Amino acid sequence: MTHTSVASATAVSAYAAPAPKAPLERITIPRRELGAHDILIEIKYAGICHSDIHTVRAEWGDDGNFPIVPGHEISGVVAEVGAEVSRYAVGDRVGVGCLVDSCRECENCRAGLEQYCTGELGMVGTYNATGRDGEPTYGGYSTHLVVDENYALRIPDGIPLDAAAPLLCAGITLYSPLAHWKAGPGKKVAIVGLGGLGHMGVKIAHAMGAEVTVLSQSLRKKDDGLRLGADHYYATSDPATFEALAGTFDLIINTVSADLDLGAYLGMLRTDGTLVQVGAPENPLSLSAFALLVGRKSIAGSAIGGIPETQRMLDFCGEHGLAADIEVIGAEQINEAYERVLASDVRYRFVIDAATI
Ligand code: NAP
Ligand code: ZN
Ligand code: ZN
Image 1 (cartoon, rainbow, N blue to C red):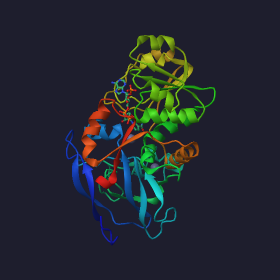
Image 2 (image 1 turned 30 degrees about the vertical axis):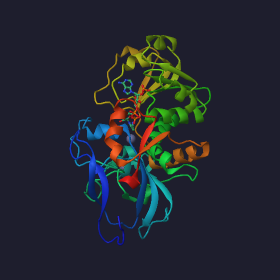
Image 3 (image 1 turned 90 degrees about the vertical axis):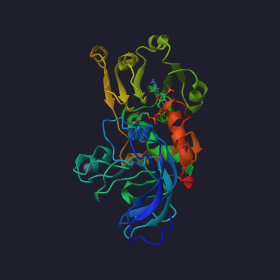
Image 4 (image 1 turned 90 degrees about the horizontal axis):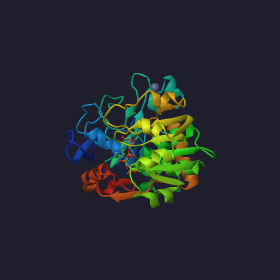
């Protein structure tokens, strides 16, 4: 983009799905002119989240506002600031996650839980949503993004921008429930699924001081899991796992993108334990009531995190030297990368180099 003026919307390059299940292709999209509190970000990297794939395949009972430019794990550098911007300056390293606006007035927004905004505007998704201005939002598989400074995050200096990008969704989606349910010393935490979310869950839960177990489909990634910080690693394809671990965990976080037999997993909780669902499969969850009744167990959900907590997560990762394990790809490899994510063949996040867009 040759950006000489902020007087009008600017056309930038992006990768979009033109229709449900269609391969992504290069298109041109508009980015709005800079408002007083907007910053223009030159995107450096965008992570590929499984939610991008669910969305462009229209798996969530939403027809989708095509063309969709996915991408809500965005890192980059501030290239320009609006007249009244106070939080950021040109050259700052910043990130944008899953939300770019919310009502700012409801109880949840005021509590820093913007992802649960109950105002009329609701949480405005970074893509496949409609902004305050009535225009569609387009995500991070793009060269530039205009966002309100209050919905951008500061990336600590010690974290490289490529490995930082996945923190903006995968990182916060695991940090938030781990913090809420108090993962820490003396707590036994299981992470189900060692993908993009799961591998960040292992790193963060370990850094919080919990005893961490990975529950993966096979033992194929066991060495990686232990290197990432897990204390134990089990295959869920082996029925003996469920017997050996019966009544073990205080907290189980399920990151799996497909249907699971949740009742079997609840059997691995201690009395009063909680299973937190963060994976968002296409089909409704199902389980027997008895799996909850016996042992006073809870099943809960958690969606990403609010803006203040996302900044706390980034600072925590900076202090503990945490970031994602990534494979950087060019934009022409996006469709192939999607197939590999669907085949659980990702170690552990694909990140698009925005210079190739
Ligand atoms: P991912 O990288 O594809 O990881 C998912 C992992 O689940 C896979 O690596 C695999 O781990 C396991 N898995 C996949 N298919 C399975 C199956 N049929 N049976 C058992 N295990 C299976 O995906 P992700 O980006 O981490 O996202 C995971 C889910 O979280 C998606 O549904 C996504 O939409 C959702 N999500 C939710 C939020 C939120 O706010 N709650 C935020 C972001 C994403 P193993 O190979 O180790 O078995
Ligand atoms: Zn995501
Ligand atoms: Zn609100």
